[in-house]
Length: 137
Picture 1: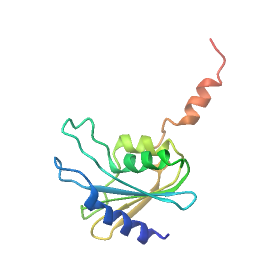
Picture 2: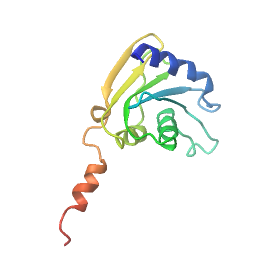
Picture 3: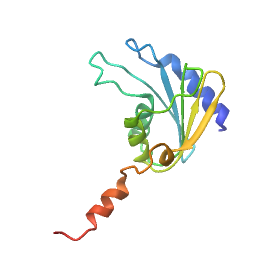
Picture 4: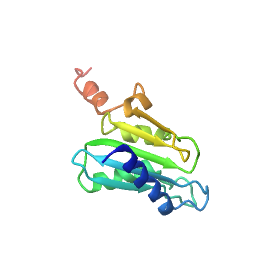
């Protein structure tokens, strides 16, 4: 599946977002390593803290289905220019390695970068491996 097809699928998902408070729909399409496509949208909650972003929604659905390796995640909103994932989503995405993040704007503008570039100096599973391999003091 090419980048434009993924952007189109993500854009189609905007209608499924549940955002009665912010009125800011976000849709994400995750391309798993095996070619499986997983959708996610933002789901808001009156308590705000219970809200989940589209990126994390897609990742949770993928992990629940047994996927752990990803080629890309495509994220769209109704903003004219591409919106970047929030910090929590960046940390959540980098948990599963370095893969492509495609951000699409309603005007057709697309920005692409890797999860590691979006969150430099990230705390990753390798950080814990390094810590756990140190001699006890």
